[in-house]
Structure formats: C-alpha cells, structure tokens
Length: 310
Ligand SMILES: Cc1cc2nc3c(=O)[nH]c(=O)nc-3n(C[C@H](O)[C@H](O)[C@H](O)COP(=O)(O)OP(=O)(O)OC[C@H]3O[C@@H](n4cnc5c(N)ncnc54)[C@H](O)[C@@H]3O)c2cc1C
Image 1 (spheres, helix red, strand yellow):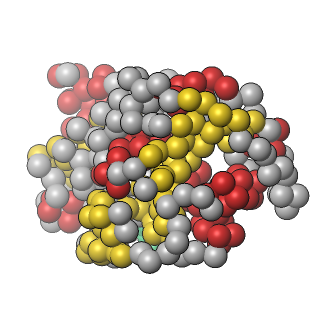
Image 2 (tube, rainbow, N blue to C red; image 1 turned 135 degrees about the horizontal axis):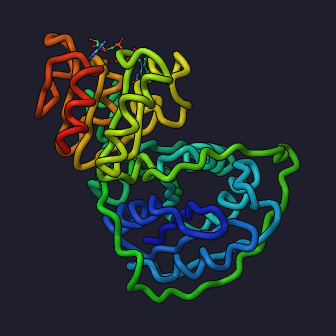
C-alpha cells in the first residue's frame, strides 16, 4: 500500500495537523510519502522528513505553490497521486480546498472527514452533524480522503529519517491568482490545537462585551477563543473563530461554552471535548445534554467572579 499525505504548512513550518493525517495513514498501513508543495519550503520538507513513520518526502518547490492556491496544488496532487493507493490531507480549510479538486482531476469520488480506519478501503465518517456515523467502503483505484485531526492522535514530530526528493512542478494552472491575505495575529493558542477553549455565543451580547468578559478568562487559562455561529454572524468576532458543523472542529481537554444554547450544529464541533463546562442563564438550554459541569447564571456576573477566583 502506498499513501501520499499532503503536508499543510506556511513555507516555514509544518502545521501540526499533518501529524494527525500521518497517524491515519499509519492505520491504513503501507509506505507513507509526504508531499510538501511550497515555495522556499526546504525547511518544511526537512521537518516532514523527521516525522515518525514517514518513508519519503517529496518537495515540489515553485512560486506557483507559494500561497497554496488550490487550483495549482490540486493539479500537482492529481499528477503525483496517480501512483498511490491513497491520497490524504487534513480536514482543514486548506485540505478541503485542495482535495476535492484533485479527486475531480483524477475522476474519482472522495471520502470526507474520516474519523476511523476500518481497513485499507473502509472508513468511518460522521453524517447529519455527527448524529450518525457512516461506514464507507471505496472501490476507487485511488482513495482520496480528508482526515478529521481530532479523531487520530498525532504521531511524533521527531524520530523519523526519511529521504527528501525533489518533485517536478506542474506549474501554474492559470485559473486563479493570489491577490492578498489578511492573517489574524494572536498571542493565543490556535483554536483547533488548543488544550483549553473558551467560546462565547449570542448570549454575550456584543463584540465589546465578548472581549470584556471572555478575554480575562482566556488570559488566565491560556485558552484559545471560539464562538458560536450566531456570535460570528452578529459580527462579535471574526468567522475563523466559529466552532461547529460549518466552522472548526475542536476536541480540547476543556471547553467552556458561555452564553451558547447548544444547537446540534454547534455541538457537532465540540462535543468530543474531554470536559465541557456550560455557563448559561437558561437551565433548559440544550447544551446541558453534553455538559459535564453546568452553571446557571448571568455570564456578566458569573465570569468575572470566576476569573477573580482562578
Ligand atoms: C446548516 C447550518 C449550519 C450551522 N453551523 C453552525 C456552526 O458551525 N456553529 C454554530 O455555533 N452554529 C451553527 N449553526 C447555527 C445554529 O443552529 C445556532 O443557530 C447557533 O449555534 C446558535 O448560537 P448561540 O447558541 O450563540 O445562540 P442562541 O441559540 O441564541 O443562544 C444564546 C444562549 O445564550 C444564553 N444567554 C443569553 N444571555 C445570557 C446571559 N446574560 N448569561 C448567560 N447566558 C445567556 C441563552 O439562554 C441562550 O441559551 C448552523 C445552522 C445551520 C442551519
């Protein structure tokens, strides 16, 4: 079995999400090759070569891959991927942008968001916002799948000694152009990798109140910050903070949901968290069903009191 894992990176460092994908590849079993498509990305390839369980690293270094334009990277993945049994990427914004295009170019169907590997061609994936788990068997010549990172424990970032080989670029597909990017800079941990997440919902009332009430709590706990879709749609915080079915999937050790009712679409993104704490003034709020600890009260008084006691 030969597996091609698409590395996620920023041309400088390998994103930790790739380590979870390698873990899923190990469950399938076989030779694992990591593809680093980037520009000036030798350092990323060197890091990927050290990842435990990786047999080979392919580095496609070309200006066409500098900004991970999905059209360009998908063309490369489809070209290189022909020689593999599986092509895997993280179920992140980047992975979800690239892999469907690569699958279409290879003329195969793809499997999204796998959470378990039953065999080399049979996988489990959540459906209906995580309320049911489908077992999917693929008979495609190349199995193309995105991997839900929180479902697979990351392999060690060190310990491997794979060879790095150059891969020929397939160049610019000529159908998209990089204009600019706006990156939110934050001192806080990255939402999907954080050990503790503090999330705010519509109950927080405003963007100003979100920061006034929740920033001190997140600061004290060293937590990442998240939000419900209602809070994002109301403009309290940017939409890359959204947790849920159409946002990010998180599974931290501790998830604190503040002023969030617990709609199934929100639960789909956080119910695998190890300990869930809900703070809500409504004792009937559905988040109660998944919360380990449940505090009924007004967040505007409860949270400052909590912060003062930590
Ligand atoms: C296709 C689809 C996809 C979706 N994807 C997502 C998704 O990815 N993520 C997501 O979150 N939602 C998603 N939604 C929206 C989801 O259905 C809910 O509308 C949303 O999660 C509600 O957000 P909320 O809990 O912040 O708001 P509400 O449901 O309005 O709840 C606010 C809560 O705050 C409490 N509250 C109010 N004031 C206070 C106070 N002073 N102190 C304490 N508690 C207070 C209230 O009791 C209430 O429980 C999706 C919906 C659809 C249809």
